[in-house]
Amino acid sequence: MDGVGVVSIVTAEEGSVVNSWMVVSDGPLWRRDLAHSRWCGLIGDARNVFDKMPHRDLASWNSLLAAYNSRSGDGTEALVLFKEMMCEGIGADSITFVIIISAIAAVTKVEYGSSIHGSVIKNGFDCYVNLENAMLGMYVKYGDMNAALTLFTEMGDRRDVVSHTIMINGCIETGFIELARDIFDRWFDKDLVLWNSMISGYVESNHPNEALVLFEKMENEEIEPDQYTVVSILSACACLSDLQYGRHVHRLILTKNMLHDVFVGTALIDMYSKCGSISDAMATFYKMEDKDVFTWTTAIGGLANFGYVKASLELFYQMENEGVNPNEATFVCVLAACRQAGLVEEGCFLFSTLVRNYKIQPKVEHFGCLIDLLSRAGLVHQADEFVKAMDPGERLVAYKTLLSACMNHSKIDLGLKVADELKRLGSEDHAVHVLLSNFYALAGEWSKVEEMRRNMKIFGQSV
DNA sequence: GTAGGGTTAG
Image 1 (cartoon, helix red, strand yellow):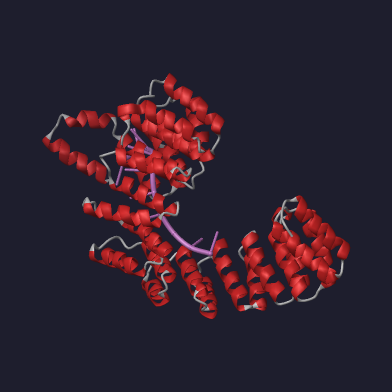
Image 2 (cartoon, rainbow, N blue to C red; image 1 turned 90 degrees about the horizontal axis):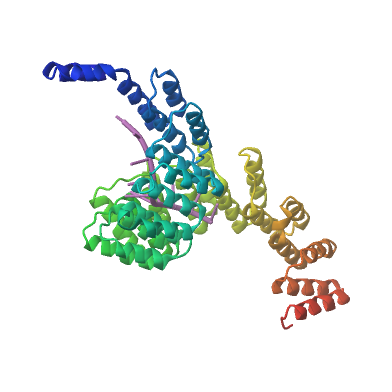
């Protein structure tokens, strides 16, 4: 073990260290193995190491807790382990509480959250900034910005850059973008993460121009952007269709020798395709070594939006051949491509693939594409079968599509059934009443036309 | 080598 080797070198010069090392000789090596498994994401290995450890100190327990916590965002296993800790009388320190609070936030049980806040205060950890930050994060995850703001205020001078980042993100998520900016401006010791939070916040809340302005302010203050920054900025360029700025950012990435990971690559593809340069998008795609489902989906969607439906579908099959599993979003792209080009057979085939091969539960978007595709082709009975497979609460739009199709293709019998269903949904949407009224007129059902017109008056809309 | 904050597709 190299740990032992290091010790012997150290002890040759400083004999006095030997005794203190001997006392904890099994600890550091076990702990190193535990941490190593954790770093590799091998939770099972971490648990094995932990179970074999002759002496488990609080740090080992915390390490395993953190391992459970970092996986998949589900804090349940961490909470189970915490219970085990309590049963064995291990106790907990402030670090345990930080981990447990984030585990609790992940399982989103508000009642646990309030009780843990009590325990924290009881244990006298309540003015420990990392713990307070963990609690801030918990309130933000619950969407309880009032509690978060109260705590943030109480913290006073203990607030650090992390507290500010948490608050800014919470404000952005709840739509208080100006408050976020205010908190951002008031904090003078800004680090890169804080800048990135504010910039991505602008992009997420659909303020791409503000994101670009802030990015330039950041450059003026000579803060070096990283891959997180440029991904947000590229997304802003995509929103604005600003090809020139997008190219500028691409050059920046190359000249600054920035980390060119799958996020950056995918954001570049998206930017180029939304800014109208599909050739640059595809050139970027083919240059990328690591591609994930996001990368493929972005390229497939980009081609489809350009009207290159055939190329888009070919890329989809290539993706499958390369062993990358498409997801919901990928299927939205390919089904939309089929709809656009009126590819009935291929659309139906892809829909069945989605269900059978990939066991994906089709969503409104998938049904919507297929029903529109079938309806436009006049295959209204097939379309109707798919509407029936949908969740009843989501059928409104589908029935509107179908009823229009029945009108266009003069399928009165089915149209009458669809109209009944549509009426039963009791929508107050003016367009639905107009559609129904027009359909009944076409079907010669004049009493129902009158009924629809009365409805329109009841809902305060002029005919 | 124990904890808290930031990134991509429809």
